[in-house]
Length: 340
Image (cartoon, rainbow, N blue to C red; front, side, top):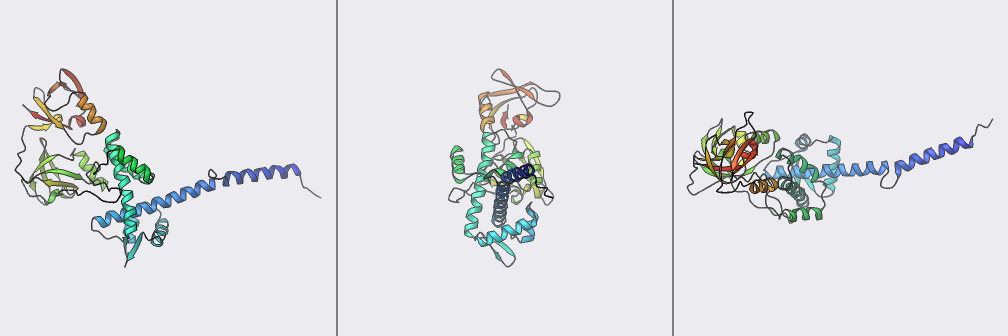
């Protein structure tokens, strides 16, 4: 008996055809989307490997496969496959069991570093994102921008030489400015210097520095240096750090004698009934935030005092040029004053 049903066959044909269309539709089909994502992920893995190798080599460290797998958040087999492809494409090579960048690989790595640091500069200067978010957001964008988009971003920012942490931004030809200074634990007591760089990795140490409210560009004087702690004065405050944390700060010593005046402080340290003059705004305040403070009258030479202290801690209202303006503590900490 023939059970052939032409209607059922026709329906089955359209179902299969529709499924195949959804699966293999040019560009938008599932197959192409998965393939595109696979290639994209492969590109991300390769670029992350290049960047990690660049940072290891730049800091004078050697890295083998075991170390590389530990620092990368990818499936081990994917990393191995990427390493094979990178070796074939002359991006890396093995010296015994140590992975090293070829000249071609280093050039590629510098392009990734350039995008990352330009994007952090953009986030710092042009947006209101917290500095705790800069690194992770830049990690995403470093794989997305084309060469032309990167150059337009650099031009938009005025071709900056350093990112907001003080790391040099490679030029389009791979050249970089020098970072002046040495790690803070290497400075003897009574050294006066300026913070030129704050390392943002490892994250746990960077978060400690953020919690201490330490600012790049600040003038400091070392008052204690021993194996258990580093103590320094800056902007009217005393900071105490473990040496492992202090090592993330680069300080450029100032050769000529500089006196750190005791009555120079941050606005956040101004007390009720004290009067002061503004002497400047910290480099930590950038872009729109900086312009807003200037527009509100927080300019050099302006008289300032506390108009109203918040019993809950913040914000406090400050009297400046006859106007009462409320600022959070983190905003006031970026305004430098000289107490009268």
